[in-house]
Length: 218
Image (cartoon, rainbow, N blue to C red):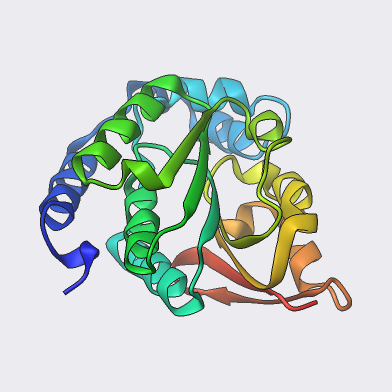
């Protein structure tokens, strides 16, 4: 038995996935497909875009959540950085793995204050809040200071256009063997070009569900 498969987390995840499936987003519905695509890839208007869709859940799938849990457990990770908390479903999987690893620290950052408030509630309900440090605001600022000296695992699941900039902020603190999971990484070709380049210090490969899985090899 694990934290992931027992009370209170197992039933909480069922509840949250059900709520996410039923949720709608008036802000997203109001955007044309072209405008949605433009904002999604913008490096200057991402705050406006994510403000418009602040009620959209944007959760990882159950399969991706289980992958996060397994990678955290198998790597023995103790220090994790998550870019893009949303309502905290991915955060729950990561924190559960930290608990089952014997403890650790998860820094998660989210632009939208309403999502931070809900994610805090979910982590509290799961009994995992003591493992998580929430940073509210633009990740280019919230991750710019007071980071641990060594980071074991990173989840990229915030504004896709910022993936490379966020990685570069964290890069000097990634331990050799650190794992980076980037969701929907195809939306940031610059990021993929960096982690896949020869001599970059990474081994990187596309994985299921549009995930790029990278290892800090040197």
